[in-house]
Image (cartoon, rainbow, N blue to C red; front, side, top):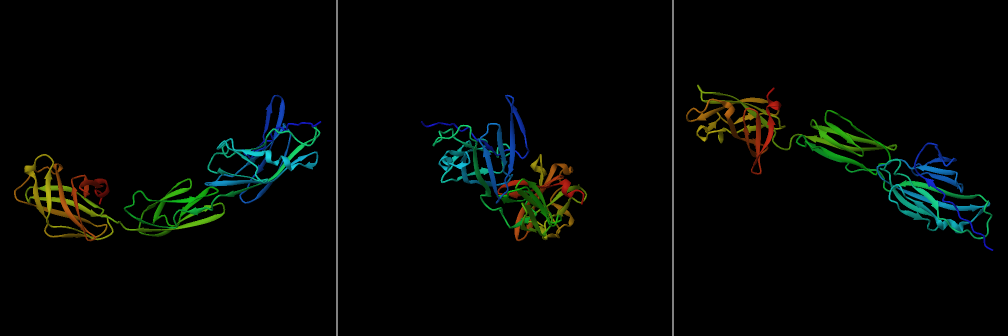
Length: 358
């Protein structure tokens, strides 16, 4: 008569790197730890003993890992019974909840290395089955296997060469994809650019024209991205109305060129606009086209064309034309803010805080 035996679930739990002891219903359950390393093979041996669980921890990584369980053997009474290997499966209960059964003696599946320790866990179990041929129920059962973990893809920078302009206020983002370990980001020249680090990505912010290198170290590997910072791609300048002299009928404006090229203020096309009454609006002119070098400040004297206007400069905004890199820009300044005309709308460009102290 055939004898039947149920194998208790053999649990291989990838969870923790510490030896722990759990007490449940007065039964002492021991936990043994295996630590997997990328590219290495770890041999595991599990006894069919309800009093013992064996834990394996996979490392943290900004990528997916492939788990391969090979050379699976089921031992009974000192003999190999590989007819039962087909009933061995991995239960990815903490992540996807899927079950992966052995196929041709191999179990293979992927796990997300970005998850927490708890979620980077799985169980290696065997179905409750009837064993043939007859075996002694008191015999000790053992499952042996090898486990190998590998990165699904090699770590790689999303960009190896970037160009930033001083206008790039949002910076440029670079990622280290498929990183298998913590990443250390550095910049070779902090005067040229700065970085904001966030997990497997970093944002590069331009500071001054020049060239430097963004560097990343991860899992014993080094990566490098060339960073070139250029001057401003667009006009960046501003002024504020300092005064209006009723004796000379002249508006005085302090103006700074914050761009990296010479700009010119046209002598004509300027107008003073009163915020309350159009009757106080006046056409203005300069003595000639005014050239301003990068980083320099000039006092601009806008002469009113016609009669005197309202004396309070707080009520006025002066519109004028700027020539920069072969293009014309319409700009406007009051006693606090400078705007620029883009796509039919006025957009704030600079404030008094940026230019008032110069």
